[in-house]
Image (cartoon, rainbow, N blue to C red; front, side, top):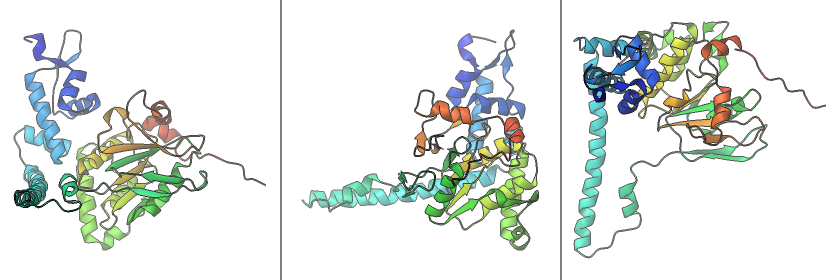
Length: 343
């Protein structure tokens, strides 16, 4: 195997690649990488494995499915051109933004040489590319009208809390407060059938849904009416944000893992998504990224709080205790908290 410094264990390899160890295992399961095994059976990653894993990570970031990435690694570039074109478009947009800022800098420096002071707000405007949007509103019952504010809306926000904590009411209120938001409630499924008759009438939506479903199925998702209904809501073109009640409803573990990978792939250009969940396949605390947030609703009906995704942070253990595997979530699906009515 060569020098021991040339090979990394799974944890160190994942850290160097900027992904979770769980992602490495998924790449292995789908045939993208094959780690070297020690005599004791431990996985190790040498230069060849790290190079292949690095390419896999890059292709995922570009928007390729695992199946597409595997085909590229095996010499078939189908699907790569569209991903590169989309990435090129993003970079060109950034170049235009930077070009405009450089021009403002040049003009400002020319004026300074003539002894002219900057106008009000000109310097601040050079430092702020895009104001981070936020949302503020009064909390519904059971919080009793307390003010609540998110100073910045992330690309992906998880809403989590124990039964009876009010998280569904919070999600509904968020959808009302966010301009142009769509709320995907549990009624997105009717009698087990996908409530998406508009797919028959909207060819453009149907094409987007079919394309996304194809990506998810290649990533190992199990086809279902629940998955189709969820994707139909996510691909609807008008909302500026989407709030989803129990995103894992009706989805098995493979579908949940594919859906969350898809949502991460869409950011940061995609619309913000608020996903209510209690599944650890959706909210993997070890994989929460910089443009994701966890919004926790405490059992004692204290105001919802943002929780940092690392052990020791306020609320971290409470969030972890709310999460369960997809298998357990399936057994408890439909269980709701019952609260006695006041006389």
